[in-house]
Image (cartoon, rainbow, N blue to C red):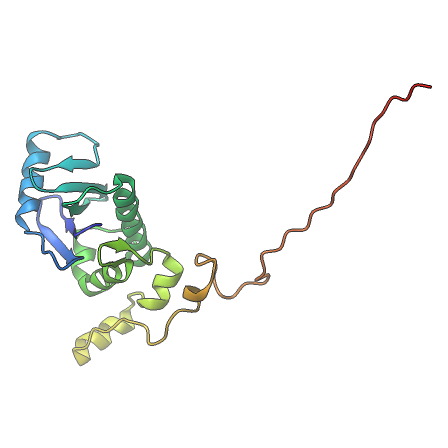
Length: 194
């Protein structure tokens, strides 16, 4: 169970902090992590770091370090895959992710993190469903947010794909059934003696 997700810039500054559970993780763990990276792991591609109090998982993309931490043992690949999915979804939403785009779209990034994780466990990681839950940023929505002071990008209805057995499939599909047709041809070769 992940307890917290941080998005760090190249300088080690915390851009986004999302606490996932009731147990709050102190932000000082980011300072410890950054000192560790600078001192021990410069150029080390390891994605799991063990601190005296936490397990830290990291994924680095385009100048942004995605850092997740927990105090309990958990499968490391689950945390790394979740952070990779977060990076992929943010790239899908915002284009090239960097420090400026994350700061400019802070509300959307926070809402995406909120929808992707529920009480420390990955929940909705499919981009099709997330696009229906959280509206993508565009110029009109940014202008309305500035003029009205409201920054709601949450959709008003539940996405259709959440009830689907195949969540990655869009709801507008030509063949919605999962049918497979097979032709079976039987052949028998035999040698017959009198």
